[in-house]
Image (cartoon, rainbow, N blue to C red; front, side, top):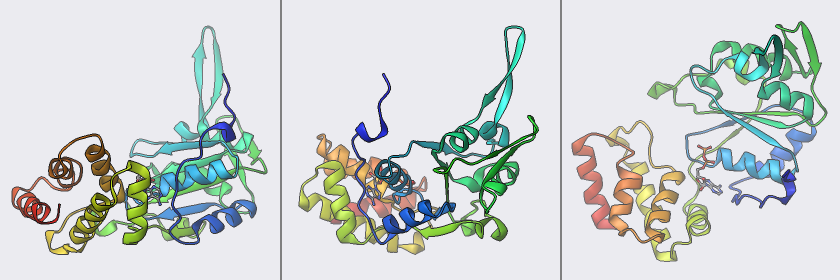
Length: 264
Ligand code: ADP
């Protein structure tokens, strides 16, 4: 059965600034959008929410080092005695006016950036070299990409010339009040538990001397909240959902366990 986009329940998204208004304007002006920020700060949830509220179908591609332009544009496949062309998700989105979300675009192979080039400027067209054809993007097509600017920690960078093709919004860990509301809404935990989780998250974020590659994200706090809500003991939930994913170093983990015992 086909389900219309607007029949699906709207994903919960708590705005942290003017991002909803910015997205709407960027969409109406047919510009590409880049969401910058660490993992687990609500970028994907925001795109899902916006696609729903604009009533557009969303295609999400989680980019990794093997993601190539062929994966996005399409390929010839052999079917019986025939060779047929199969559109990839980018071509599909361009033709049908969907929102295409390239999550962690900097991780993809360089030919992906080349492939989206002509879609990110006034041309808004996709050239498919294997077919020798150029498609003008559908009126409603929108390209959204995310990027984690953690170059100092070994993540891949996005070239300035590529970044400048996008309108960009920065995401970060939300204010305690907002993060508290997100936890309550997402997990149903009691107010006092949400407060403690947020306080612990903020404390660990400020412990820069631990040298963590990535620190506590809202996602990790949400995971802990869910486990607590379903009956796991508070400290055990924090240990497995928040602390263990952060580090493998015994000393660091022990310091974090002690902190948890004090705060949770
Ligand atoms: P990212 O795409 O930045 O890695 P996600 O969008 O997957 O992060 O967010 C991870 C989780 O954190 C979501 O599933 C949601 O539970 C929660 N979350 C983070 N920020 C928000 C927000 N502003 N509103 C609602 N949920 C949020």
